[in-house]
Picture 1 (tube, rainbow, N blue to C red):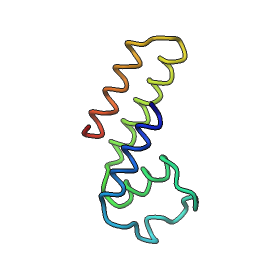
Picture 2: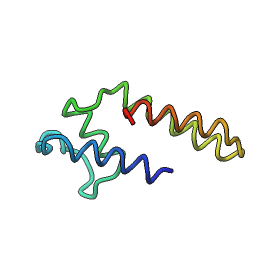
Picture 3: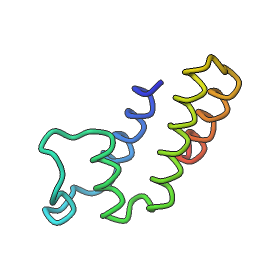
Length: 86
């Protein structure tokens, strides 16, 4: 599922304008979902609150998955999708 969330973030990034050097400052040369979200936040494409909500929901997904809580995992994933507008 992490791959699907990463793909959603990458699609959101691809739909926007190219990142400026200022937005890319301090990020790794190899893009990661976290660095993409950071750049989108800097460019105003995604709010800091949205980034925080996604990170918290993904932490809930992982915690639920770790204990075998399928319903909790699915609810947290639904929260991520809703936050991403999917």
